[in-house]
Amino acid sequence: MMQTGSVGQITGLRNRLSHSLLEKVAGPNGTEQKRRIHHTPGPRWFPQGSPIRVVHADESMYIGGMRALLLQALHPLAMAAVEEHSDYRENTWGRLARTATYIAETTYGTIEHAERAIRIVQAVHKRVHGTAPDGRPYRADDPHLLTWVHVAEIDSFLVAHEHFGSKHLTAAQFDEYVAQAGEVATRLGAVDVPTTRAGLTATIEAFRPELQGTPAAADVAQFLLRHAPLSRPIKPAYWLLGRAAVATLPRWAREPLRVADHPLRDRMSLLGGRIGTAGLRWLTDAEPMRNPAPPPNPGSTPVAAGHDTRETR
Picture 1 (cartoon, rainbow, N blue to C red):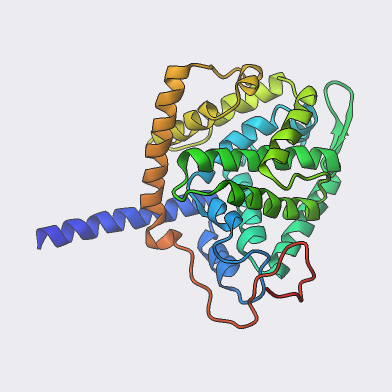
Picture 2 (picture 1 turned 180 degrees about the horizontal axis):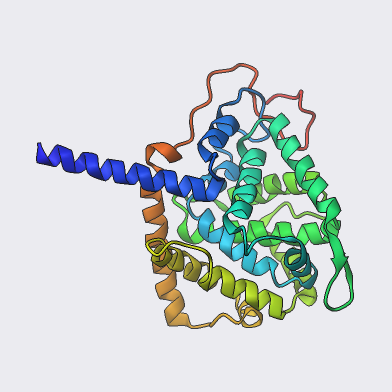
């Protein structure tokens, strides 16, 4: 009897923690958002089991997301747009929820929801423009800048999945992931988007002459890694994930961000990342975080993002 009670208490604690995590990541209406995205009948861009669905469903995305923000900050124009137009310091979790919802809608949502999500982001981008501290003009809808944000993001998601993902992907599946994510980025307005892992690496290398460490980029790194608004019980777990994100950054990115490069510490951080993602999997397998299965619907056949929405597979 006591054993049953203990199991019930642990399950209850797990569900409460899971619900709290969902609210942090997806906002206060996260449960309703998940049900809408995953449960609404209709055709989707990507079929069940496709690499983009596998990568974006994995808990390694928490680490990949932090790595992406650090890497993106190295482009002075992208950083200027964030500094002058984003409320990430005052509304960190709101910004995270908006980003998570966009990724979920374009990965798992119906085509109608995915296309609407892209239109909303495009409308926001049109209003974001200004002059960087070095005097250069910037626009958030600049196709070249959108490409940098995209490649920094998907490279980070892939690297995090390689280190911490629960499902092994083959080289061909990684290529397919790059191509699938590229379809969404192209619809958003990015140009010359890579379609293979090798192309992704080459694109990032081509951007390197444009990247540099700025005081704003270093400030973002310190905020993300040390000063994110978190309750005391969450901070140790967040620190593990943040250190793992840093450990997976390329060496050329770490000095300009003013994050230490220490091989032994990096090995420990990678271990910490594996422990952290294992803990997240324990939480996300609880009831509040499970993706509801969509009802059977003959009309909900996935279609390729780059194809006519009437074409079925």
